[in-house]
Image (cartoon, rainbow, N blue to C red; front, top):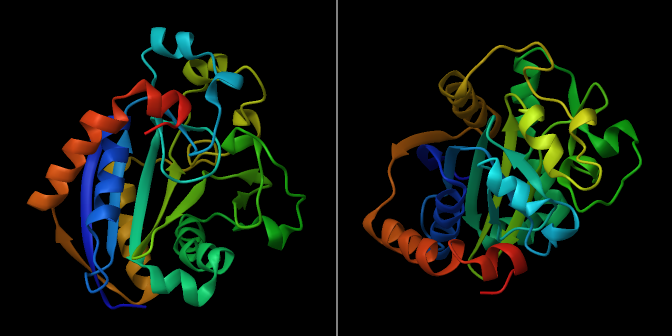
Length: 259
Protein backbone atom coordinates (compact mmCIF):
# COMPACT_ATOMS: atom_id res chain seq x y z
CA UNK A 1 0.00 0.00 0.00
CA UNK A 2 1.25 3.52 -0.82
CA UNK A 3 2.53 5.19 2.35
CA UNK A 4 1.36 8.82 2.00
CA UNK A 5 -2.30 9.70 1.32
CA UNK A 6 -4.14 12.96 0.78
CA UNK A 7 -6.75 13.35 3.48
CA UNK A 8 -9.71 15.62 2.71
CA UNK A 9 -12.59 16.22 5.11
CA UNK A 10 -15.36 18.16 3.38
CA UNK A 11 -17.71 17.92 6.41
CA UNK A 12 -21.50 17.85 6.03
CA UNK A 13 -22.80 18.85 2.60
CA UNK A 14 -25.76 18.43 0.30
CA UNK A 15 -26.26 15.10 -1.46
CA UNK A 16 -25.64 16.64 -4.89
CA UNK A 17 -22.43 18.39 -3.81
CA UNK A 18 -21.13 15.28 -2.07
CA UNK A 19 -21.49 13.17 -5.21
CA UNK A 20 -20.19 15.91 -7.51
CA UNK A 21 -17.02 16.08 -5.40
CA UNK A 22 -16.57 12.30 -5.50
CA UNK A 23 -16.80 12.26 -9.29
CA UNK A 24 -14.53 15.32 -9.61
CA UNK A 25 -11.84 13.66 -7.49
CA UNK A 26 -12.06 10.54 -9.65
CA UNK A 27 -11.97 12.55 -12.90
CA UNK A 28 -9.00 14.67 -11.86
CA UNK A 29 -6.95 11.80 -10.43
CA UNK A 30 -3.73 10.91 -12.26
CA UNK A 31 -1.78 7.66 -12.01
CA UNK A 32 1.13 9.23 -10.09
CA UNK A 33 -1.02 11.25 -7.66
CA UNK A 34 -1.17 10.44 -3.98
CA UNK A 35 -4.20 8.25 -3.23
CA UNK A 36 -7.07 10.04 -1.54
CA UNK A 37 -9.08 9.40 1.60
CA UNK A 38 -12.05 11.73 1.85
CA UNK A 39 -14.57 11.96 4.70
CA UNK A 40 -17.91 13.74 4.52
CA UNK A 41 -21.40 13.88 5.99
CA UNK A 42 -24.89 14.34 4.59
CA UNK A 43 -28.04 16.32 5.09
CA UNK A 44 -31.11 13.98 5.11
CA UNK A 45 -31.12 12.29 1.72
CA UNK A 46 -31.30 9.13 -0.35
CA UNK A 47 -28.61 8.07 -2.82
CA UNK A 48 -29.43 5.79 -5.75
CA UNK A 49 -27.04 3.28 -7.28
CA UNK A 50 -26.01 3.92 -10.89
CA UNK A 51 -28.58 1.52 -12.35
CA UNK A 52 -31.37 1.86 -9.78
CA UNK A 53 -34.96 2.61 -10.73
CA UNK A 54 -35.92 4.66 -7.66
CA UNK A 55 -39.59 5.20 -8.56
CA UNK A 56 -40.16 1.46 -8.05
CA UNK A 57 -39.00 1.60 -4.44
CA UNK A 58 -39.38 5.18 -3.17
CA UNK A 59 -42.25 7.65 -2.88
CA UNK A 60 -40.34 10.52 -4.49
CA UNK A 61 -43.04 13.12 -3.93
CA UNK A 62 -43.17 12.31 -0.21
CA UNK A 63 -39.38 12.52 -0.01
CA UNK A 64 -39.56 16.02 -1.48
CA UNK A 65 -42.32 17.06 0.95
CA UNK A 66 -40.25 15.80 3.88
CA UNK A 67 -37.14 17.67 2.75
CA UNK A 68 -35.21 14.50 1.92
CA UNK A 69 -33.11 15.17 -1.17
CA UNK A 70 -32.19 12.52 -3.73
CA UNK A 71 -29.05 11.94 -5.75
CA UNK A 72 -27.74 9.23 -8.09
CA UNK A 73 -24.26 7.87 -7.49
CA UNK A 74 -21.75 6.88 -10.17
CA UNK A 75 -21.25 3.59 -8.32
CA UNK A 76 -23.41 0.49 -8.33
CA UNK A 77 -25.50 -0.89 -5.51
CA UNK A 78 -28.93 -0.02 -4.22
CA UNK A 79 -30.76 2.88 -2.61
CA UNK A 80 -29.07 4.03 0.61
CA UNK A 81 -30.29 6.34 3.37
CA UNK A 82 -28.17 9.22 4.63
CA UNK A 83 -28.29 11.99 7.19
CA UNK A 84 -26.99 10.28 10.31
CA UNK A 85 -23.87 8.78 8.80
CA UNK A 86 -20.22 9.50 8.16
CA UNK A 87 -19.15 8.57 4.63
CA UNK A 88 -15.72 7.89 3.20
CA UNK A 89 -14.30 7.86 -0.32
CA UNK A 90 -11.07 6.21 -1.41
CA UNK A 91 -9.46 6.98 -4.77
CA UNK A 92 -6.57 4.80 -5.98
CA UNK A 93 -4.79 4.07 -9.28
CA UNK A 94 -6.61 1.48 -11.41
CA UNK A 95 -3.64 -0.88 -10.99
CA UNK A 96 -4.77 -1.49 -7.38
CA UNK A 97 -7.99 -3.21 -8.45
CA UNK A 98 -6.34 -5.00 -11.37
CA UNK A 99 -3.95 -6.70 -8.96
CA UNK A 100 -6.67 -7.85 -6.56
CA UNK A 101 -9.84 -8.08 -8.64
CA UNK A 102 -13.10 -6.36 -7.73
CA UNK A 103 -14.09 -8.61 -4.81
CA UNK A 104 -10.52 -8.77 -3.56
CA UNK A 105 -10.22 -5.00 -3.53
CA UNK A 106 -13.54 -4.71 -1.67
CA UNK A 107 -12.38 -7.11 1.01
CA UNK A 108 -9.01 -5.45 1.38
CA UNK A 109 -10.27 -1.86 1.54
CA UNK A 110 -13.09 -2.70 3.95
CA UNK A 111 -10.62 -4.11 6.48
CA UNK A 112 -10.24 -0.67 8.06
CA UNK A 113 -14.01 -0.66 8.72
CA UNK A 114 -13.83 -4.06 10.43
CA UNK A 115 -10.99 -2.76 12.59
CA UNK A 116 -12.89 0.46 13.32
CA UNK A 117 -15.87 -1.45 14.65
CA UNK A 118 -13.59 -3.73 16.66
CA UNK A 119 -12.05 -0.65 18.30
CA UNK A 120 -15.57 0.37 19.30
CA UNK A 121 -16.02 -3.01 20.98
CA UNK A 122 -18.18 -4.52 18.25
CA UNK A 123 -17.86 -7.96 16.64
CA UNK A 124 -17.88 -7.20 12.92
CA UNK A 125 -17.30 -9.45 9.95
CA UNK A 126 -18.15 -9.99 6.30
CA UNK A 127 -21.31 -11.72 5.10
CA UNK A 128 -19.23 -14.49 3.54
CA UNK A 129 -17.51 -15.20 6.90
CA UNK A 130 -20.83 -15.56 8.72
CA UNK A 131 -22.09 -17.80 5.90
CA UNK A 132 -25.21 -15.69 5.56
CA UNK A 133 -27.19 -16.10 2.37
CA UNK A 134 -26.69 -13.34 -0.20
CA UNK A 135 -29.82 -11.44 -1.19
CA UNK A 136 -30.49 -9.06 -4.06
CA UNK A 137 -32.55 -5.91 -3.54
CA UNK A 138 -33.04 -2.49 -5.11
CA UNK A 139 -32.53 -1.13 -1.59
CA UNK A 140 -29.05 -1.35 -0.08
CA UNK A 141 -29.90 -2.19 3.53
CA UNK A 142 -32.40 -4.86 2.45
CA UNK A 143 -29.81 -6.65 0.30
CA UNK A 144 -26.76 -8.71 1.19
CA UNK A 145 -23.51 -9.30 -0.73
CA UNK A 146 -20.31 -11.21 0.07
CA UNK A 147 -18.32 -8.34 1.54
CA UNK A 148 -21.08 -6.38 3.19
CA UNK A 149 -20.32 -5.94 6.89
CA UNK A 150 -22.47 -7.53 9.60
CA UNK A 151 -22.63 -6.84 13.33
CA UNK A 152 -24.88 -9.04 15.48
CA UNK A 153 -26.36 -10.39 12.24
CA UNK A 154 -27.37 -6.90 11.08
CA UNK A 155 -26.03 -5.07 8.05
CA UNK A 156 -23.79 -2.10 8.80
CA UNK A 157 -23.91 0.57 6.08
CA UNK A 158 -22.94 -0.13 2.49
CA UNK A 159 -19.98 0.21 0.11
CA UNK A 160 -19.72 0.53 -3.66
CA UNK A 161 -17.09 1.04 -6.38
CA UNK A 162 -16.53 2.73 -9.73
CA UNK A 163 -13.63 1.90 -12.06
CA UNK A 164 -12.16 4.01 -14.87
CA UNK A 165 -9.11 3.42 -17.06
CA UNK A 166 -6.83 5.38 -14.75
CA UNK A 167 -8.41 5.14 -11.29
CA UNK A 168 -10.91 3.47 -9.00
CA UNK A 169 -13.21 4.89 -6.37
CA UNK A 170 -14.73 3.12 -3.40
CA UNK A 171 -17.10 4.94 -1.12
CA UNK A 172 -19.24 3.81 1.76
CA UNK A 173 -21.31 4.80 4.74
CA UNK A 174 -20.74 4.38 8.47
CA UNK A 175 -24.18 4.85 10.11
CA UNK A 176 -24.05 6.78 13.38
CA UNK A 177 -27.85 6.80 13.74
CA UNK A 178 -30.98 6.37 11.59
CA UNK A 179 -33.93 8.73 11.57
CA UNK A 180 -36.37 5.90 10.98
CA UNK A 181 -39.40 8.13 11.62
CA UNK A 182 -38.35 10.36 8.72
CA UNK A 183 -37.06 7.72 6.32
CA UNK A 184 -39.15 4.55 6.72
CA UNK A 185 -42.39 6.03 5.24
CA UNK A 186 -40.53 6.95 2.03
CA UNK A 187 -40.15 3.32 0.94
CA UNK A 188 -42.68 1.38 -1.12
CA UNK A 189 -41.04 -1.95 -0.24
CA UNK A 190 -38.81 -3.34 2.50
CA UNK A 191 -36.34 -0.58 3.43
CA UNK A 192 -34.09 -2.90 5.42
CA UNK A 193 -34.00 -0.30 8.21
CA UNK A 194 -35.43 -2.67 10.81
CA UNK A 195 -32.74 -5.28 10.08
CA UNK A 196 -29.86 -2.80 9.78
CA UNK A 197 -27.61 -1.49 12.54
CA UNK A 198 -26.28 1.93 13.44
CA UNK A 199 -23.70 2.76 16.09
CA UNK A 200 -26.44 4.29 18.22
CA UNK A 201 -28.49 1.07 17.96
CA UNK A 202 -25.43 -0.83 19.18
CA UNK A 203 -24.94 1.42 22.21
CA UNK A 204 -22.12 3.56 20.81
CA UNK A 205 -22.46 7.28 21.61
CA UNK A 206 -20.42 9.33 19.15
CA UNK A 207 -20.64 12.16 16.62
CA UNK A 208 -19.16 13.15 13.26
CA UNK A 209 -16.02 14.86 14.59
CA UNK A 210 -15.12 12.19 17.13
CA UNK A 211 -15.78 9.35 14.71
CA UNK A 212 -13.92 10.97 11.80
CA UNK A 213 -10.77 11.26 13.93
CA UNK A 214 -11.04 7.58 14.85
CA UNK A 215 -11.64 6.62 11.21
CA UNK A 216 -8.47 8.38 10.03
CA UNK A 217 -6.40 6.88 12.84
CA UNK A 218 -7.74 3.39 12.15
CA UNK A 219 -7.27 3.72 8.39
CA UNK A 220 -3.61 4.68 8.86
CA UNK A 221 -2.99 1.86 11.34
CA UNK A 222 -4.68 -0.75 9.16
CA UNK A 223 -2.79 0.10 5.97
CA UNK A 224 0.42 1.47 7.54
CA UNK A 225 -0.13 4.83 5.90
CA UNK A 226 0.15 8.51 6.75
CA UNK A 227 -2.77 10.88 6.12
CA UNK A 228 -1.64 14.31 4.95
CA UNK A 229 -4.42 16.89 5.55
CA UNK A 230 -5.42 18.73 2.38
CA UNK A 231 -8.33 20.53 0.72
CA UNK A 232 -9.87 20.34 -2.73
CA UNK A 233 -7.62 22.06 -5.26
CA UNK A 234 -8.75 24.60 -7.84
CA UNK A 235 -9.24 22.07 -10.65
CA UNK A 236 -11.22 19.71 -8.40
CA UNK A 237 -13.52 22.51 -7.23
CA UNK A 238 -14.04 23.70 -10.80
CA UNK A 239 -14.89 20.20 -12.01
CA UNK A 240 -17.22 19.58 -9.06
CA UNK A 241 -19.12 22.81 -9.78
CA UNK A 242 -19.49 21.82 -13.44
CA UNK A 243 -20.80 18.38 -12.49
CA UNK A 244 -23.15 19.89 -9.92
CA UNK A 245 -24.68 22.27 -12.46
CA UNK A 246 -24.92 20.06 -15.51
CA UNK A 247 -25.36 16.59 -13.98
CA UNK A 248 -26.26 16.30 -10.32
CA UNK A 249 -28.89 19.05 -10.31
CA UNK A 250 -30.59 17.41 -13.29
CA UNK A 251 -33.64 15.18 -12.86
CA UNK A 252 -32.58 13.29 -16.01
CA UNK A 253 -29.56 12.02 -14.10
CA UNK A 254 -31.11 11.71 -10.66
CA UNK A 255 -34.28 9.89 -11.66
CA UNK A 256 -33.29 8.09 -14.86
CA UNK A 257 -29.48 7.92 -14.93
CA UNK A 258 -29.28 9.86 -18.20
CA UNK A 259 -26.31 12.20 -18.55
